[in-house]
Length: 265
Length: 307
Image (cartoon, rainbow over all chains, first blue to last red; front, side, top):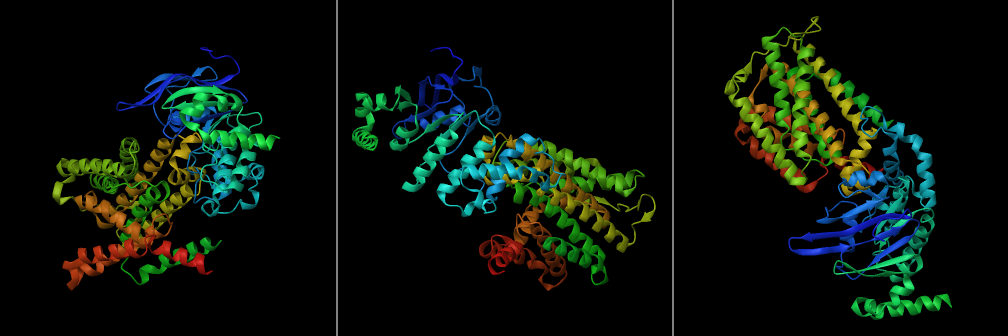
């Protein structure tokens, strides 16, 4: 698998990032299959978020290549990568807090209108996007909150809004950075279902700490440790890998595994 | 709807104000109000703190003043050219400044504005410390003579309304939406595919051009273009006006400009003249400490909470 095959949407080749002598990501070869939900897990400091920042060019790789649909995107600017269809979320919910919920989604829809530099037009020219925006809000269960100022939403709803906003730009590949971080049980379930729903016909790469979420969603899992790939496989393979258990997950994965086995039986 | 009523009310006040106040004083307020509104477009709606806006105010004044003294151009053309010059300068400033964020953005604009200040100090056509004196007001379209202070005031009012309308429209445009998104969460705007620096740059140019429009108009009102308008004190003053009035509100900078200019005018003549900077500093500190969203921002909050 050194060359990308047609069903590989994103590939990295020896992706490396060093900060003044400290190598945060070292020689990572990722390969994301189209249509998969691919999870990136690993202990704190394993370099998961750094990989995300490299993929979306919020950080510049020290060396290595990033291929999206077999095209080299290593040198592109972040906004250009987004326009190619690789849309990311952030660890802290990425919303526009003092705009309304509807406006949040509309900002994402607006770009393709080609009027984003038109400072002489009235914003009411954007109203024709409202129906589409409401549809998107509906798909994440937020249509009742369309005119709410976003800052007043609960945390879980903010994350749902973030997903609706991401969907608005019709991403080919969604990168979700810890979508359930800091959430209560109910919200975790809600967002997990939401990700499951929106993953149809899409590819998702997610960083996630909650192994229950990973076990329910991920088709494939890559385990990072100290900036390198420790192993890769489906949940069974990864959770049974003694190296993974010993190296970092330890008892946590066992209990999670038991738990999911209980749920399954 | 409510806004429309308010705007009409303000317009009526502006039209009858010369019956009570000295028209040159009112024209001065309007010039600074436009300057502050232009500045607020950047700080309030794009989240960019420029510390070099005096360069644009001054450039507008010098270009218009020079043209009025040395060419036979009519004032509206001289004003437009002053605005264009400021816009071009803004394009250069902006191109360099938007690469940096926060305090570094402010420092880049300050450094560039200082360069412009020393250029005008040395350049032969500005008369250095003396400034361009005796700038004729001319006649609009060669027809309406501006030497009458009342005529001048209504001309300034028309320019102010035009500038105010442009700013209002920019804020409430598709472009304004993107600016607000950038102010709210720049990384997210990038991740949605917006090249944020280009949006900031365009906002910077619009703001600089309108600040120059204010400077050009001011040069005609006072028959003078001087170093005061390019000095960094002026860049500070516009921040003061905007913060006192209410940053990120449409009317705040106008009120702020009115307050600051009135204080300067009435205090400098009286016994308190020597203490003017102390009094202004005190007002500024009180404003920033007790109502950070400015007077208009505070009123809007009060209205939201009680009505």
